[in-house]
Length: 164
Image (cartoon, rainbow, N blue to C red):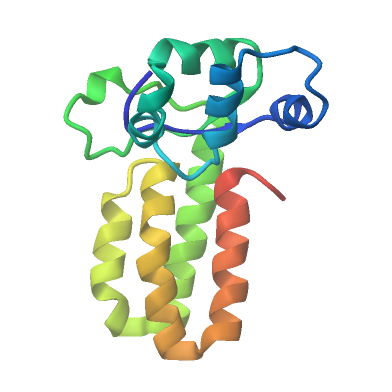
């Protein structure tokens, strides 16, 4: 498990937290609670130090179908060979989201979005696009206001995580 990856609970994981059918040990249940789809593996393991768990516990949750990888490690990670190859679905998502961000930069930021365009060109995966969103949102809010910016960024977030 790569320390820069982000995991989220599956529907089965959410159901397990509510119903407790699998009778997970308290350490695994606590670890499952910490997984929120925003924190990296490294951040979760740091927070879970008191539980005395390691990456094997996360792998166990993944193997049982309670969590799934949401984003791979950022492409700026030093060991690119360790990154998992993207699926065709991820490739299509990446292309669609990158185009939408590019169009929004052109339509709303214009020349002021030049640096954002450069960052967009360096993005190599969905995680990179996700990491770009806060700065993009901030620039949009300055330029077009909070309500229109929220609609645009919310749509992009849904596309990045694979919701239609």
